Length: 474
Image (cartoon, rainbow, N blue to C red):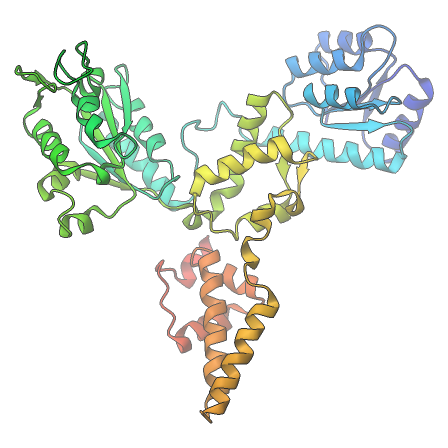
């Protein structure tokens, strides 16, 4: 481990911190000025953590902070000051300080802060950097790895692809990845949300129009198909496309030609179409809301994106990525979630999927008070999500149901209510862990054999086809 650098013009402060760190067997080195520290960096020396005063003769601690961040962007820097004012604190954090330590400080508090900074530095050294992590899509869950494999297999293909997935699962990201890794990568990628454009404008938006084709058409306009020539056209929410436009799209996919609105000359389209929807297109076909022949034209290759609740193991990876990106956009020090906060997030449903998690990380970057985010730092609506019903509410319901059944002298009150109670707990625990029995049993505080026996006794159908063997591997 590299030494902790102490930069302060006050000899007594340097002496106190040196003694404390040496006692804890933490290597350290002291400098009386920022310029001395700059000279050591110029000689090729690198610290593990920097602890610096903010106001010193010559260059200030903020200047040191700036130069350290330019050379070592991930280096934790702790800023000390005897001037505990708002401007100093704001300037320190805006410059990317790991923490702000007002003087006089408690030595044990300072040591604890240095240890946390060392842990942060070590953790970052062990993690892949942003440049080595895929910037387009992240995921270690088996379902996401299958998506990655499909993108790889399709890398030399021009085939039409249909992407299924709930809102916020990253359908456009996958479409962009398919384009980026295809033979069309050097040509345009054009995206359009067919559900977001008014019905009477969508035809012109897709196919363009000739001058005078309708009121307000004062000039010829190229549509999205022409804009995407030789490239990829991404049609999001294809399930909401009006019936008359489904017919026109089918014609393009069938013979490769289309007409601008008001036009008479066919235009050849050399475009790869990638479509996406959150809807069940087979069901819409059965309901007569989507053309069956168009469905088969689109459904050449189908990719299913799993919702976040089916890839809870990816939450820590995604959180780190989004917090780092938000911090970069705001030019602040990246924050991190505590283990308890990560575990708590893994119990939530996230109906908005990855997009909701990304928005949460941006909110935390701006609003969370400290560098390490605890459960209590989450937005109030998220902290209250698992407790929509208070204990008094469900106990009142239980008492009412018990009274109703006892009044009828049912004779099986105990067995029925106990079975319903156990069934509910096990089903919710399996839902929270993506069907993994070992994790579900740990959440409930019961043994693996017990949960397996109860699943069989209660006739619980596990929707994710999980098995004990699979649990042991994941």
